Image (cartoon, rainbow, N blue to C red; front, side):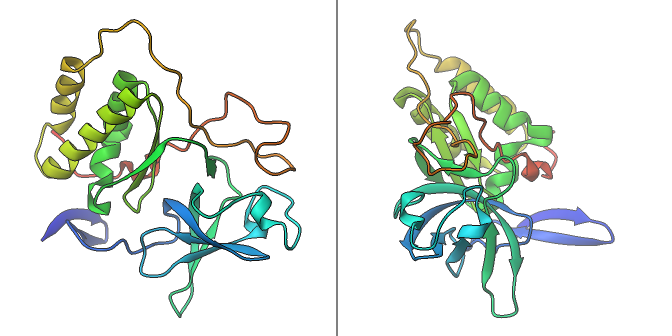
Length: 229
């Protein structure tokens, strides 16, 4: 059982459950599980770990200095570049909108629910960020990074649960908006969002050059979804 996804001249059925199967071009959220002298191993929720080579980053990394840039447990947004015949997954971080994620938390939903989270033309994710003030980075692998105040993160977590439980039902964007309006905090002070993608500079994260206005990937590539009407 799955969701019908017409892609002329063929059609595809997106499964409602199961492990994430990477495809070239997918934007994914991953975590570092191991650090070697020339690459990092990333867990992206796929059957195999994905190595991120030091040449696939915006930094000028020297051999043996990889741990200065990313450590075990760090979260990143990367793009799947290729899959070889053995199933090895090639990823890159050297593109606009990709990078290391600071602070925040990673939530998980079924990869089949990602198009619903994005919404038609980005309508769902725009509704969520507008009403919560959270920053959100969406991975096609169902891993969602959320940054912001504790209240904003919790409200996004509640919405993700709604999407997980009601993904195939029509009118979901309107239901989510009504929920967010009904749960809007009344307190005047809101905490500042604490997560962002670090800028592309020639040094490791944390050195001079980090800008406060760096933008996060919003995952809008997944806007090809079923009709919400």
